[in-house]
Image 1: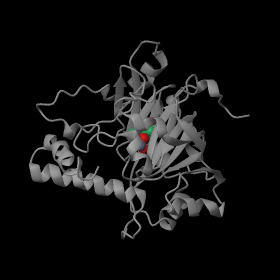
Image 2: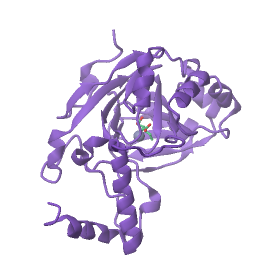
Image 3: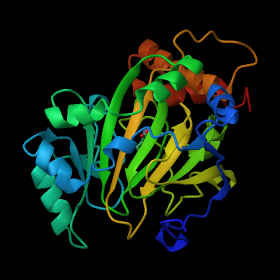
Image 4: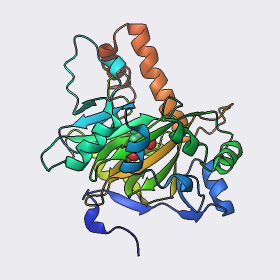
Length: 323
Ligand SMILES: CCC[C@@H](CC(=O)O)C(=O)C(=O)O
Ligand SMILES: [Zn+2]
């Protein structure tokens, strides 16, 4: 009996297939990982020794720690890069940072009522957190995750984010430039993943926009005039529950939601730099093409000294000549 049901999922008009679910010691796991294909991995015990990380336990041991908390007027927490907001830009993000001490966060979650702003804690785990949390952190199944890092020749582990979301919270569709092993500690999260080849159907913001890497499409109210190819997007869906580990390959788009009426969720991600020495081989892989497109946008903005002229020049290059 799964701990969730379909009524807890938000409804989208997207074609979706399933992501393979395998036991951690199945040899097919490594072949999917090394081919940048998503897989839900069961039984790894990656975070099994911190399943006690609930709001009460964390309040007791992170009490006065000031944590990175996002606050949103609705259920969406769309990440933006503060450094890309320029003075003459009118940028009104839906969610914004609202740092607070852990006990305040826990209290607001417990007292939350419909209509209140929503909160989402996204805190980098480092040694400034309490000693008890550090002691728990060392109990992750590091042997297993390091063996995966080695078999995939990933670069260094850059960070672990502790994610505590209210039921129903959504992280809208985006891609990251790092490999991600995503572990659930409490509750259920639904992931909709799209391979890098779906780039044309997901219309990410321009590289220089604060919403770089984030899809422009509102999944719950798509603008099919502006984004006609979204109708053709083909996704992959998976529900990640306690102790599951989902491999999210770098450059794969993902939409993530904490199931409605499922209580708050606690997750930890493990972001790794890409290949330590990725030599580009031909034919190019789909994610290489995203890297190339990003470099073209960056190089043009650099050469033009003005990101707002990049679109005009790209149109001049393409319209009537490559179309
Ligand atoms: C800030 C990271 C949020 C996470 C999605 C989620 O759990 O809401 C994600 O996108 C990732 O781990 O890459
Ligand atoms: Zn992400």
